[in-house]
Image (tube, rainbow, N blue to C red):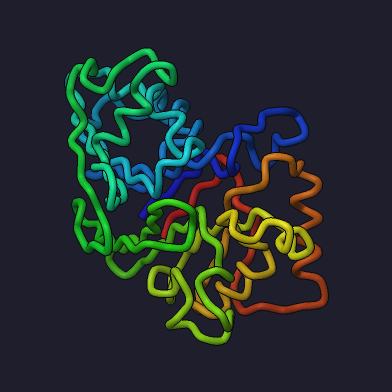
Amino acid sequence: MNIKVWGCRGSLPSPGPENNKYGGNTSCVQVYDKDTCIILDAGSGIQRLGRFLSPEIKEIHILLTHLHIDHTMGLGFFLPLYNPTVEVHLWGPSSSTDPLLQRLRRYFSAPLFPVRLGDLPNHPIIHELSMTDFELGRFKIKSEYVCHPGPTLAYRIQYENSIFAYIPDHELRIGSADFPNNPEWTSGFEIANNADLLFHDGSYTIKEYPQKIGWGHSAVKDVILFAQMCKVKRLAVFHHEPTNTDQQLDEILLGNLKDQTFDFQIEMCREGNTYSF
C-alpha cells in the first residue's frame, strides 16, 4: 500500500511561510498501487494532486468522508474531471434527507461554482455509503459513521495484511461517556483497531477543547489515548487548526509527548509525506 498526503490542514486553507513544514492545503490523501487510485477527500490539496497524476490512470475513486467545504472545495479544480477519457467515481455518506448526488450538485452550482455537475465531459459515477464493506481492486474498504456534525464517514483500508485508518474529522469525547475506558462504545474504534497507520483529527489542545465541545473535533491528547486504545502501530495527527503555525504544532506535539513513553510512533501529519507498507 502506498499513501501520499496532499493536504492535512483543517477547516480552511492556510498558506504562508509560517506553515511550510506541515502545509496549508485541506484534506486530501492518495492511496494507490500500480492498478488502483483512491483519493480520500477533495480538499484544496486535490487540485495539485490532479496536476501530477499519471495520464495512464483512467479510473479514479474519490472517497469523501463528508461534505463540509474544506473536504470538497478542491473538487471542481480536479483536472481529471474535465478529461473525457477518465472515469471518476465519487463515494460519500448517505443521508436521511437528500441523496448524495443532490448534495454534490449544490457545490457545482451558482453562486458557489460556475461549472455544473452535468456540464462535465463524463458525469461522475455516484456511490452512497453507510456502514459498508466493499472492494476497489486489491483494496478492502470498510466505511463507518463517526461523531461529527452531519453524516460523516471514516474509512478502514486493507491491502493484503496492511491496514490504514482514516478519520480526519471526529470528536472522540462525544461518542463515549467513559472515554477512553470503553473501546467498544467509542466512535471509530472498529475503524482504527490494530491499524498499521492511523490518520486522526487532532485540531485542539486539551485546554482549548472545553470551549469547542460539539464542534466535531478532538484534542491531540485524546487522539493519543485513542491510538493507544486501538493498539495502532503509527499515529499521524491530522486536520491541523488553520491558525496554528509550524512552530505551534511542534510545541503541541512535544507537550503531549513530554515525560511519557509510547509503544507506537506519533507524529504530526505533514503535507507531502509518503508511506509504504
